Length: 119
Image (cartoon, rainbow, N blue to C red; front, top):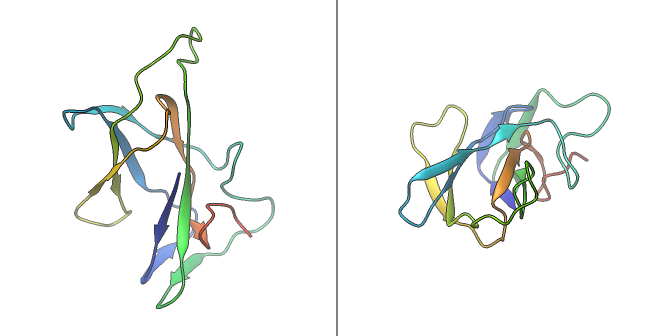
């Protein structure tokens, strides 16, 4: 999952606050903040100090999770939704979760572009 943002200036390297919700809207997991993962995140080398997101521009953060419980390999129930809070924002937004992900939730820092991977 990639959370895309627009019309916003954001200090690079900061992350979204991300919580997984069950069918009743109750938080069941909070994402671990990691610099990168299997699918994306920050790349090697220097990173920009600010990710400018003006009209027509985008920034994104990669979200990764497993479809099983990594502690014992057992099946787990997929999240129903995620609640996203932008750094410095006063409110949050719940988004439907359309994946079978249910464990080891991670979110990587905000980067320029729409793919959640640093250029």
